[in-house]
Amino acid sequence: MGISIEPLTPALWPAFEALFGRQGACYGCWCTCFRLPPAARRASTGLRNKDFIKARIEAGPPPGLLAIEDGTALGWMQIGPRADVPEWNNRGRASAPLGEADAADPAVWAISCFFVRTAARGGGLTHRLVAAGVDHARRGGARALEACPMRQSRDTRSLGLFVGSARVFEKAGFTTVAERKAGRPLMRLDLAR
View 1 (cartoon, rainbow, N blue to C red):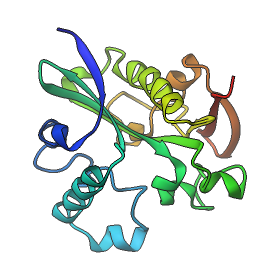
View 2 (cartoon, helix red, strand yellow; view 1 turned 90 degrees about the horizontal axis):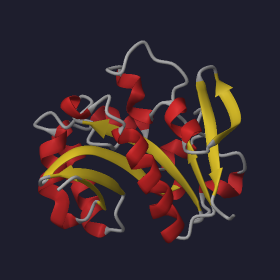
View 3 (cartoon, rainbow, N blue to C red; view 1 turned 180 degrees about the vertical axis):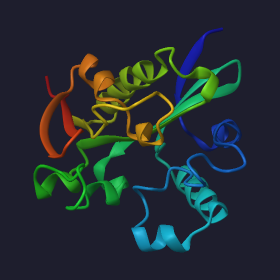
């Protein structure tokens, strides 16, 4: 059957839940890191984070894409307008927007997180997710797509790679537009062309 990459809708919640497992991936984050302010994250629990992201998925539009093979989710990529991930826009972060208006502009999108099942790592799945994300963003009316990946990591199991690898984005045509923190470039792909 092969791998399909689908927008995460409520119907796919069971696959997403199974991918993230009992712990909720990344120590119970449930991909809320850039959605909740730091104080709210510190006060939260994995169960509350799970409820938060489930409610967000149910509210729509899809907050990301799932890579699925034979009914099993292999990987996840969070993608959508910057405004949907408010902490990604925080001025103190390497991912802060170039201009204030970009944070609220519905046509400036961000790829902010990845989670890939251990057995599916190293086979190019993040490349496929990014390529599908570019198409998804174009269909959604984005004029620009941004990411703030890691330039280097000691290995593919590094927890910091939840933001992706710069090499993946470079291969997809993204270019560095700023680097406020060493090794964490803000990269952009112009979709208006």
